[in-house]
Length: 599
Image 1 (tube, helix red, strand yellow):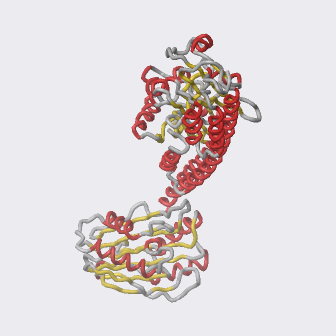
Image 2 (cartoon, one colour; image 1 turned 30 degrees about the horizontal axis):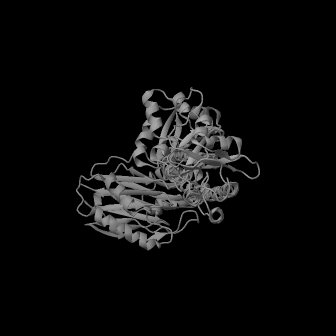
């Protein structure tokens, strides 16, 4: 057959213009910026130039399968039928990939003889299928096939030669695009790790944070991401995120109705037992059948369309805390060992966050228990009085030295103290406890506030429970409807009468600087009056003047105590007041004690 004769393979009279057009197509391939561009050029444009009735572009999907990435002139039924097919299935495409060379079929009869298992469409035809070879290894990474309906015989050698160049350029362009995609993917992974790390470090509620991380992974890195934690020997699902909101329920059902059996070999159970990651580059139906617990389990697994998956252990201090699983489905993504490295990096960060959160929680629980033992277990029950107290630990694991106490004397008078020792931690808490105990003993001998404050000064000079401390001492005398008060370097108490608040500000220096003058303030205190004693954590905020905090406390207190019923629960009122006034960042402990004459 000559270049001027009608022939097979799309060769028609005037082959030179067609070769030139095909050469331009080859040049366009090199400039393709995306896989969509590449697919459109190699199927539609090339088909138009060479007169092909049909074009098929397929790439390797794992070691044993091919996946269609583009077609031209192919029915929707056939596209669905051949979306993914095994290399073991004999076709011109699979032969081209297995053998790494161009496959030419010159007629329908030859097609039937060489590929008897293919569906016969009863159309006279010929075809050319090009292997796409990796330049260095010469291994086939895919194939492009063109079919020519109504034409038989061998293709024109010159056209075949240019098609070979097209195949080479297609392979090179695809490898370039894949490299760019990997680079972009790595950049996206690094950005994701940064975002995930910020989320993990920004909260000690690791359960909610891990749910956020699972959602962040979808859809950029997975179509489906789940987090499971080991709880009493059972792997329980904490979070499930899916690219398709309608399939979230299916994914959750799969993991909750059929939780992994930690004694069963393989799968995430093996990840938990071994602490080793699991990569399934290609999920086959045989795998789904083998792992299914029953027919319903298999149906849901198939409906989710699993294509590729990886599971990595969440670990801390050589202990497996759980498993994070990434699944590819709708996207057609296939995970590789490089993806495992990324997932393990994320899992290490998540495991550390879980461990830190657990350690923080344990330390805070220990601190809270210690603090509770250092404060009065309950305030005295004295007729005619309403008492309330609130203590809130700062948003840290260290405990503070805030303390308070109330004691009833035999003559119906009341002695109250609220104080704060210098520093934080166990030493501060023990110092506060010793100060409270000392004041309780000293108050039996020196109940008057100024005498009590001077007695504490003498104690500090002889055997100081703490280097420095602030305190306010109050002696209530219901017999004379009055109180007396001495302030030692402490925030001013707030007296509320008839809904109006005023601060008592006649103070003196801190304890710990020697014996100094301790003035006493005498004030009337009758039925309905309220006195609030507190530590500085209630009114101080970073970057804000103390006067602003004091005015905020006064305004909120007046609102809460104005027209308050006599039988109101003072603890509840003080709790609401602290909630409204305290710095949301909780940089310091807060102690607040309230006193109210009710009869």
